[in-house]
Length: 235
Image (tube, rainbow, N blue to C red; front, side, top):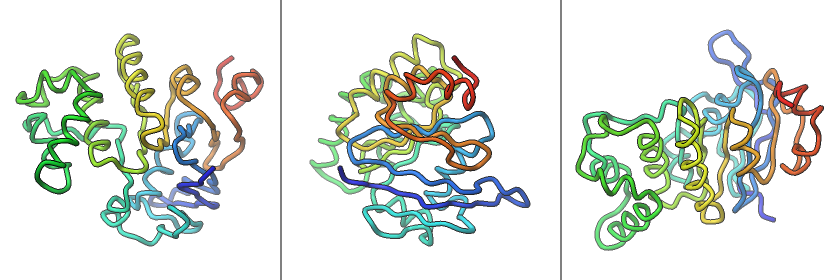
């Protein structure tokens, strides 16, 4: 097993608030690592800290065994880390095609090939290729946000709450797409929907009050109702 990304005792302040107080976890190449926890536990801040959007006051981040916590965000992204924020970051007046072109690095046949490969994973986007993103449904916007991060074949994708605000039938579609992406890229998934996390996850880390308090293989969490009840409020 290759550890693609690793954090050590991350501490992050946002203003005067000490949000992360010791977050440690590993993401294994080719797996889906799920960060779980109640609202406000620090999951989103963890992703933002890794990317450099909310730099840590203490702790380290390693990507392919190299420290990256001091890098500016654009340099971290250029290492091969894609990010799908909770709010999707979609521009309503740009077309699907324009979103792809802005996101894609390089030119020529290889770019066209990457676009076709990505559209094969997200067929709804092909149908709306020349439509403004503002007319897409919530599920289609989420697909666009994920596709935009995936298109450059980033080695790591960090995806924040992809099921948020979506109808159950749409959540199933997002789950199926992420399932097809497994193995082609490494995913760190922040997700409140436990059923999605259980379905997709290989390993889990539970963050509580800004600290990593529990970790293991997802099958272990499935077997321990007391863990789910204590840290996630579910049985």
